[in-house]
Length: 288
Ligand code: C2E
Ligand code: MG
Ligand code: MG
Ligand code: MG
Image (cartoon, rainbow, N blue to C red; front, side, top):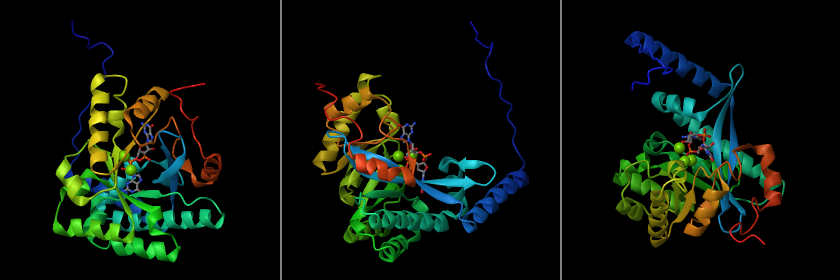
């Protein structure tokens, strides 16, 4: 039987090229203005040691505080920034903001937790990301070991000698390289090995399968074995339930990140978590 009742009807509308161009230009102008007006802030989401619950590192995530629309998601503005090339300016701003925040926490005597920043392939292809990061680290007196770079698999797809050399130059500075959203792209195991990357962040789509389908655990098990054989740390993204956390503990996944542990938070809320240090009770597998 057809279940057309209650089914949503969509109207497909193909705007004229000029209209699409107009929208693109409006988005571009809004973003350029927002960069000038310094409307971007960073939220931070903890990464936690799976076995101990210890707050060990974090990810910086960009937010646009729009004066009228409120908080705008990076899922909306990062693609526009990438399309228009504004990601180069915005990306530099984000790196500098992250370093400024780390310097502030350091001045407050808080632990210097490694912090990752997401970069787009355009920033990598520009060829001066190394200088931008090195300058920011120097300006804010941040130890390179404290900054990590999150690359998507598409960043590595280019797979040119230039990219490989650039990635190696980050590691020479002491900067760790993370593969973001692993499993959604097309990176090969040989690429992971050759580029000598440090951390694999498994996409939340795979975490969501844990406890739902047996394949979920099979996949994670294979990833953990492979990553450990390559001397990489494995992080599960998008951990939302205690069941997922327990499965990841049993599977030997090194670190977890997700709403179950903490949402991304404004910088002001991070010191409290640093002082708490353990963000979930130790050994939930064997409760007293
Ligand atoms: P990402 O780097 O994979 O970041 C993780 C995203 O998953 C974040 O979304 C985070 O809020 C969300 N998340 C964390 N835990 C959970 C969970 O348990 N469940 C679910 N459903 N989601 C969770 P956010 O902050 O909206 O960022 C989206 C994406 O935008 C990021 O994905 C990243 O690709 C991009 N992005 C964010 N900030 C930057 C930036 O500064 N530069 C660049 N180039 N991209 C950025
Ligand atoms: Mg990321
Ligand atoms: Mg991710
Ligand atoms: Mg993502």
